Image (tube, rainbow, N blue to C red; front, side):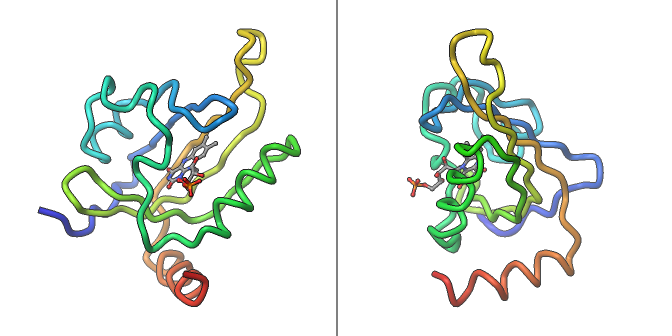
Length: 128
Ligand SMILES: Cc1cc2nc3c(=O)[nH]c(=O)nc-3n(C[C@H](O)[C@H](O)[C@H](O)COP(=O)(O)O)c2cc1C
């Protein structure tokens, strides 16, 4: 149970939300690494993978940025279903799929380096 999953160089986690942060889509890498089946994720708030070590201010900044129509990127520590965690470097894009009438957001995540993780840990610790 638990522990860190260190992303592989080839892991690429994608998810899409509506304007409220409800999950509309997640790719296989996201499901596998987070430990959920796709049907357990669709329709749930994205905070389902939130880790308590993540400062609120990081998500406030994420939401303010994408709601302005800008791209947000940053380091995120997420929880897995079985109580583990994994770090990602995420890039979140605003206003995807507007032609469907459901404007939403898209996040693409890759492996951060060990150095980047150590720096993000140092930055976030006093913010908790
Ligand atoms: C496209 C997109 C992807 C997101 N991905 C994550 C994520 O991987 N992990 C996470 O904790 N929050 C993610 N969020 C932020 C959540 O919506 C939420 O704001 C956050 O988990 C904090 O939860 P709270 O707002 O209930 O405090 C994402 C938001 C968007 C728009």
